[in-house]
Image (cartoon, rainbow, N blue to C red; front, side, top):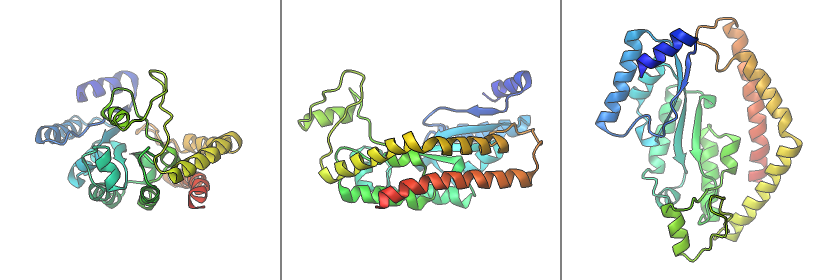
Length: 264
């Protein structure tokens, strides 16, 4: 794999890679050994790359993440899914909030900036109670890694999955066409009321306001070259830092609008 990356760098001058694999770090001795070997070979060959990877919360290890960062890891995705143990158990996630907290603390301790981390997170599911929803929101917001899309994510229940079978066993009727999204009702009508109101706000915000945020964010992103070639030294570190701060301010203003609606 490193040899292939090296060839791409040499032939095309590309230095950014994305490993679109839910288990870049497989939670097994063999999987961990593979990642360690991968980092070692990158260092030995002197391949200068930036890469993105996906992993589970229970595979976030400080030593391993530090090795990956030195090898070029600059963005990562973690399937946290929930900040509520009852929801994680209901979804057969196989992890706990304690493990999620540990992963967050490790990343924070290593100095991973919020914009370099994305969570897989499900804010709403059909069996969720209002108390669980409050815990979901509070946990995500308290991490400091919240993004706007997390707040609106609603569980998709796909045909043929164990969760779909469980819903049908409860007497629910899936009226959606094969391949379409199941528009289900919530067990707790209060959760349904919150989701409906929030969805209404989201659609209106998208229609009336979001373009300004997108344009501003994109302008700063391009100016700072957030995903710039590692060999590009065109911009001074001071200028990059100032423009990056401006981009973060735009993203925070976007989040604050959604926080206000959730809090209200």
